[in-house]
Image 1 (cartoon, helix red, strand yellow):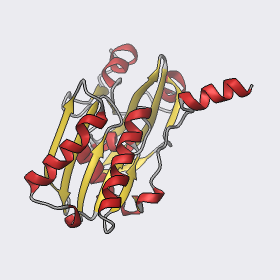
Image 2 (tube, helix red, strand yellow):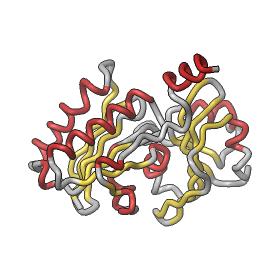
Image 3 (cartoon, helix red, strand yellow):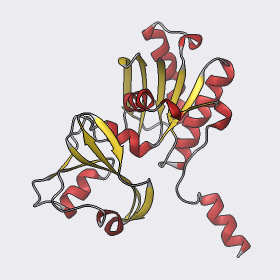
Amino acid sequence: MKILAIDTSGKIASVAISDEGRLIWEKTVFTKLTHSQVILPMVTEAMRESGFDYPDIDCVAVADGPGSYTGLRIGVGAVKGICLGAPSVKAAGVSTLLALAYNCRAFEGRIAAVMRARPKIIYAALFECSGGVISRVTDDMVCGEDDFFSHIDPCDSLILVGDCAEELKQSRFADRNNVRSASSGLVLQRASSLCEAVNDHPEFICSADELAVSYLQATKAEKDKAHRDS
């Protein structure tokens, strides 16, 4: 299966292409531009340099949340547009937190995927990794730091991954040798991890119409509307 993957869920923009589980092309960048300005040019670059055309692609995968409201909409919108232009191509939505866990699939133990939602509040999920196989321990959640870490046995071998991993390592686990933060090259989103997740979970594949964003919490527009209606 040839997979084109797009991640615009956080501080970076990332695009990857895999073929039968082998990574063909990947680029991940920090940018001061909006994701809408950089992601499609990156996709064009990936397709040109890999030698593929859109009809060659079986599936376009995207991080569907949680994460940046605007970034998620841009990523999902880009995938829907690609699928509209190439009707034979399927889509796949992958949890941002699951994809972050795939960054650490060489780790043996528990993986805490954590992203900052707002002060003291995180998007988080806990996973178990054994022999490169990742399984869920908790659902994706938006919660207080204390609530999430109450799920974790203090004796567990644990790796933290995500945009607040190092912050949480220093603030909560500075003296714990069994807890580490992912390395700088793996701590943030990588589109290649979306490819790996879809290869392991073909049930994620869907039509472009079925693709939707999972925010986990109300958007600002929804909060404003609720405030006006109250």
